[in-house]
Amino acid sequence: MKQSKKSKYRHITINKKKYYFYSIKWLDILGDSGHCTAQEFNNMKPAEMNTTGYVYSKDKKYLKTFASYDENEEQFSDRNVFPIGVVKEMKRILIWKLKKLILI
Image 1 (cartoon, rainbow, N blue to C red):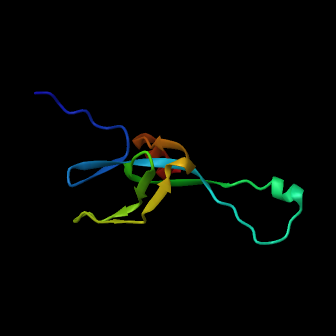
Image 2: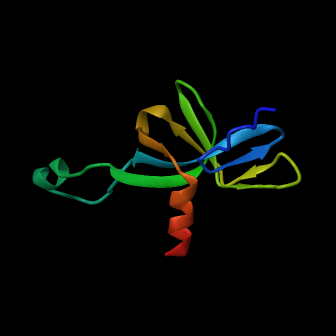
Image 3: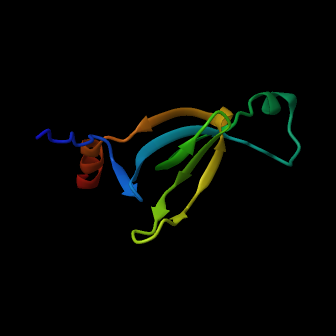
């Protein structure tokens, strides 16, 4: 009998569907309502953000994530929907890296 291969990536299973845990780097709008010089304006850049969570779905337009879930029912909390254009990098989190982070 063939033994199923255990995933090396952190994930959860809800209603027989696997959701993997990611570190997501994305760009957020930076705004300011005060006065500034042209030099200050030229130096403005979007904020570089990092979010961790489970990926619910991803398509050409949107990336949907969640961080909390109900263990008994198919319910999700701490949800985000990112326009795909602001997402710069997605990395699946390895189980051993997660254990190493917890030990520190």
